[in-house]
Length: 358
Ligand code: DAH
Image (spheres, rainbow, N blue to C red):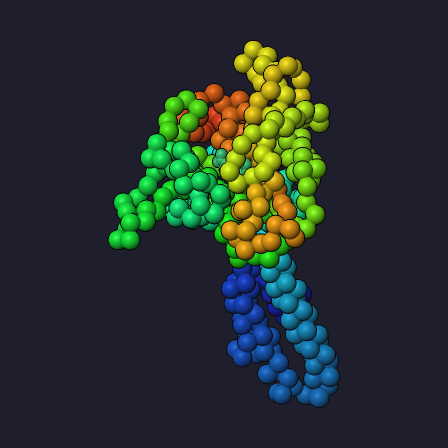
């Protein structure tokens, strides 16, 4: 074998054997570097006779080119192998769940609040809020409570110590004061719901000193009882997720509405379960009515131009009914086991498109 062929065989074997880019670089320097074997061979061309050079020149150049190409090809092969190894080691399984085990549960009161908001949002209502600490004007006077109304008494209302001028702030006893705040600051048409905390000095199986209400208020030029009925019936059907929920409106009294009514829904108790839309019993779920002309006047609206309707419902009570929870006080006991049992999946937000509670 000629000397060049031996060199080529030797270098090709070394290129094949190089397992890393660093090893390959060593082979390259040993072959094509300034003092590499191929370069040393090139230097001998100068001392050759023209005939020898004519023969050896192309042979050496061919060798140099083939070795350079072999090194380049090996370099690419090594880079691809390195990339493949990296992709394999950093592989992500996109089919794995994002959160295999969601921690924590949504409280039934929060869930029902969200359900109510989802229903009325779809009907075009905005959400309004107001402060928990109120004054007598917004909580009572502007809502047409007479000065001696029993609801103002210590028995029901949590009052704060009197201020210097003798006025006492209080914890709002209902969400209705936000009706006043809205009517005094916004021009009709008004279409709002008001979710929030309310407070009364009362505690037993069906009463807690803090509870939740969602208030509703619609003020426009041509609103009437038909709109009130239609809105609340549509709500009841959607909320209880039963198509033929039967409702009934009974005359009632509230100072801030005239006429006033309470809405009942039909139900039946089967064992421990409550079934809606059947049976012979009626259950009250909310108070409602046409906004009293005095209330409109107190907010600077002309009752001859504007009418409206309003309602207020107890959220905790609706949660008990819908999800069969027997004791109201458990809602506020902060017992993690209770929440684990009755609570809702945090990634499952109520909305009408996929079904409220599923
Ligand atoms: N504020 C009443 C309560 O707490 C509930 C209520 C009844 C609100 C009738 C209303 C309404 O807006 O029209 O008992």
